[in-house]
Image 1 (cartoon, rainbow, N blue to C red):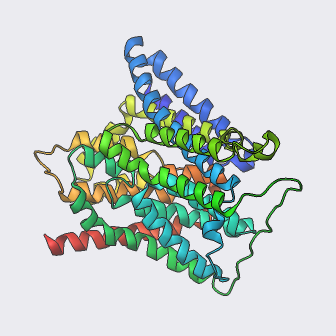
Image 2 (image 1 turned 135 degrees about the horizontal axis):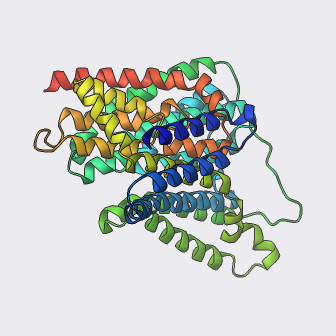
Image 3 (image 1 turned 180 degrees about the vertical axis):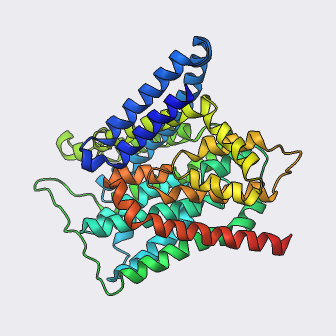
Length: 427
């Protein structure tokens, strides 16, 4: 059974990678792959009850991420409909692409540490559509946003789902992970950012012309600022909501979305239906990219099958038996996370290594937070941030691999080498 599952996953992955040459949408491929993998697992795997329990568990974790993604994308669309991003774009005065690249890289890095890498990517990629006219420029910026968001998310307990898993599991503590990974994560960003900014030197920013719909009432400064800060406030409040209530983040984003919906209805209640139609949350819901969300569903369910079939756990055990060295094993886990989702990989590693043998804040746990968090940047579908950017900007898998993957790989190894050196120096 495992051989068939691996073969189906590899073919699914290849079809997603070559989406443009074969002219088959990646969302269709991901959904077919997920369906086939679960069908084989159900027919050749354990009893029906165990399969249903596994499906329920996978569906729950997938639905949480999908609801969160839908909520975040809708909030961004509401802010965009009110021209809220002009609060930022009107303050960006630089005319040089290289300067803008530095600015975007650092803003993304620190914003993802406060929010999380998925939400930050959605916000920043949407912002680039307001700042850059040329698609080729936007793709480069989207690639760097993925790297910056994953690097920024790795060094705080709320910035990346794998770091959060290790934090909740007791493998790391908040202060130590921030002290240990801030500089390595920053190096992970600085290496590709320096190269990209140098490649863009001398080029000027080409801003898109603002579309004005004839007969459509424009929003006031008050409405723009209110919806921008309210939308951003909802996104920032989600990690706080999770910390205080211990409820999953998707519930926080849905609560915030409801508040934003209520606020919008109150602000525009005096306007006619025709004047406020383009500003409503109902309109924003119709504008989110459902194909990107379905791709997300497919790829998460596909990887979940490998987890329940114990294929990922077997790979981790094989690495332990074959390689032996912890630093090399964790580096390899990070590289594998560029291909498959880092969540089940980290979950498998947490099960393999006990807290008795490796107490909280040990080398393995901090280094795993770095490698699993940043290794996903190497390929576009290796992280939630990459998948979101892929859907928002329709980024080609092969284009990303040619233009961004090597830069991400250089940053990955540079940060990893620094962390190992730093750990030996301080311990």
